[in-house]
Amino acid sequence: MKKTILLLAFALSVSFLSADELMENLKNASDQVAQDLSLFMEEDNLYAGAFTFENRPVLMGDLFSDLLANRLLNNSRFKGNIVKGYSPGTFRISDAQWVLSGSLYKTGSNYFLSLYLNDSTGQQKKGWEFLIPADGTDSLLEPSRIAISSGGDIYEPNDSSSTAVELKPEPALELDNLEIGESGDEDWFYVDVNELGSGSTMYILSVQTLGGMDTYLEVFSPGDTSYPITENDDGDDGNARINFALTETGRWYIKVRGYSSDETGDYGLSVALEMREAGPGEPDNTMDQATVLEIEGEEIRRTMDYGDDYDYFRITLDRPLGENKALVIQTYSDLDLSMTLLDQYDNEITTNDDSGLDSNPQIMLPAQEEGTWYAVVYPYDGDNTGRYTIKAYLVDIVKDDYENDNSMEEASSIEINGPAQERTFMPANEEDWIRLVVEEPGEFIIKTTGPIDTYITLYDRYGEYIYEDDDGGNDNNALISERLDEGVYYIQVTQYEGDGNVEDNYYLSVRRY
Image (cartoon, rainbow, N blue to C red; front, top):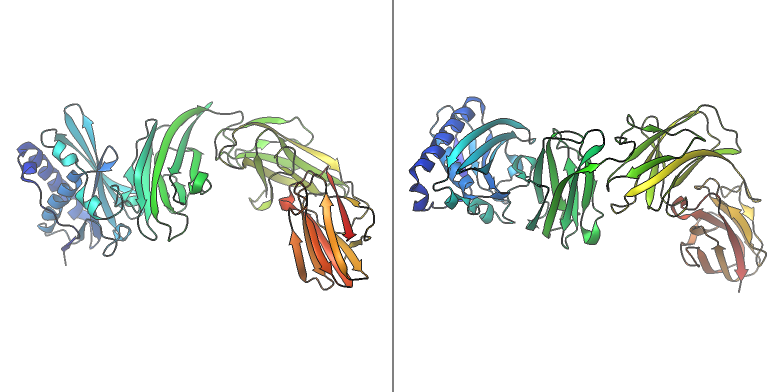
């Protein structure tokens, strides 16, 4: 049964009807759209509305929705349902199989109306274009009453890709008074991109939320709104920030939501499109585009061009390493960088942040068989852009006097009130286990000193956890102060996130006091 779901009713001002030419144009446009829709729409929900002018929903969309609804209901071939307006308690836009939206542009003394019919995935299936006279149109550029009455901000309803609001950053724009108004609410926007950088240039999309709300940003590439190509939550003050080099032309979608499903509140949105000079080696953002990094070759100079830049390097070891050799991959810069190592099948092997010098990452692979790996270098956060170099080289594995002590079963021993033991982590993710024998109960201090950020965990003789510490000592060293009864204990010492240089050492001591 054909019906119209009227979620908002309003009376049109008589002044709107006085511009005969305008009304005649809108009626003709709605006739054509209704005729086209009736040819292929089955018993589906059609949402009609969300016409924007200068990125804001306007009253013309409300009027056109009324005209279109009347014509579709009087068309015997149309079998669908017409949904006009938006009410979260009654109908969600995401439930519509088809969404009709439009954009209004000023062109000389007239206006140009572009209409888009999208399916439930946000893909445009049909479009129409109409020339609209200026006489009477200005009165229809007031804010949409459907959008205002629906709750939330004036851009509602825009809670799916099919009702996304068009943004035109030329080169930048900023929206305020936006709102995530209910649990699970999402705000969708889109930017049409018609050109890309080539050769020495790249086209950067920068998106940032503003305000005090804890927001989450997702960006979707053209043709796929099911899985984001990039996402972010770690901007300042709970905001999110994305800087991304666009890889194809088309419609790019931006989704804003609360960090959690029950997060609501007000926020602002800043969007910019900027053509920038590309750094050396670009594009190198995928495994297929990876730069070859020769082992024991020259350092390669690269640039973190933007906050979400990922540089790929391919490293190939053509012969097995002996048990006393290790492969090291390291960056050098004034930036705070991170590095992830992948195997040739795109599986993550390890990630490192600060094991190198001055907040640079360093990854060590000891005693490796021949193979190929991919090192992916990226900023720790969006502020770390600039130049860096990367190098792959071989080192001798120099074990300390207490190896091998990498498990509880292999634990070395330590003397209470004896000299501090000089130890190393090589490779960086190594663990040191130490057996401690307490013959008389008392108060004990177990601590490390040195340049490495250490972590100590204390266990009883059965491997049951007793206590742990990260930065209780000086300069990111660990310190445990605990009363211990007579018995056997085990001390496990690791690096905090493996973030110490493999050439550094640390000192471990146990004192009774």
